[in-house]
Image (tube, rainbow, N blue to C red; front, top):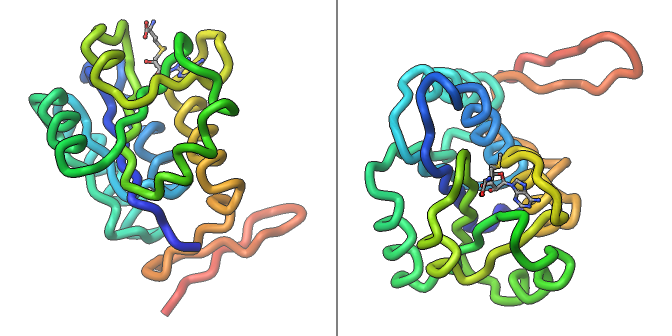
Length: 179
Ligand SMILES: C[S@@+](CC[C@H](N)C(=O)[O-])C[C@H]1O[C@@H](n2cnc3c(N)ncnc32)[C@H](O)[C@@H]1O
């Protein structure tokens, strides 16, 4: 599967409160076909966790960048020709817009929030997209967005640099060590 130029911007990572959720956002981003993540904040434990996953399971290209100014990331993304998608329960249903986004065939920055998201992001994103209009989770929203973009193909991602690969089993666990 060819990966698209998709990056995630995780807003407002609070060290203690969000450490697990932001880690899960990054894990989903890598596993389901994003090329990297910008995290508003800094968290060296998160970095260590994701680097360890990359070292064992592959995807060394997957980038993690901690940023102090997420608005600058959005501005620069748009001025370099990419589109910005903000995932929010207040947005337009994904089914109404996904084909248009796929057709644009350009790089995508996907914004997910943590606590209340500032109005600025609603007005400076190209699309405010709802994954259903109920409140749920940034992890679920990102997973479903990537799944719609790749139409399910992301579930078959193979990382050519993986040291470990799973051999699927009906029961039990089988892991192969790659040369
Ligand atoms: C726990 S929610 C908090 C939302 C916050 N109350 C707000 O006003 O934006 C954290 C993030 O999950 C994502 N999210 C939650 N429900 C969503 C939905 N139905 N559709 C799209 N994204 C959603 C959004 O990115 C949101 O910023």
